[in-house]
Amino acid sequence: MWAAQCVALDRGPDGLHTRGVNPTGSPLRWFAQGEDHLPIGDAWLSSAERERAAAMRFAKRRNEFLVSRWTAKQALALALDPAPADPSELEVRHAPTGAPLAYVSGAPGPCSISLPIEPGGRSA
Image (cartoon, rainbow, N blue to C red; front, side, top):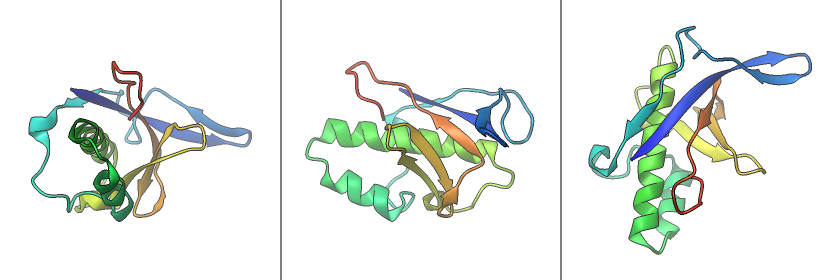
């Protein structure tokens, strides 16, 4: 089971600050899903996500990647108003530090994504 959280970004003159609400002003909520929630096929992935998943040798790691991405996209879609109709327009990229970054239609998203570190020690 993976969980994702969206935190709205408040862009101040000294950089990014987070606050405890999503972009619509409602309180933060965790969103959790498992492998049985994955859609059939890979059309919901961005092209970069699709390439990354295809390059993974081990099915367990690929499934973890897919579930974490689907969960993050669903959490991001709930935080957006309106959300894109095509989930492939929502993408989770990584900062140089490895932190997940939300992108919508190729541009930085209005909130950050928080994905837990799984029991094996890897982040999503």
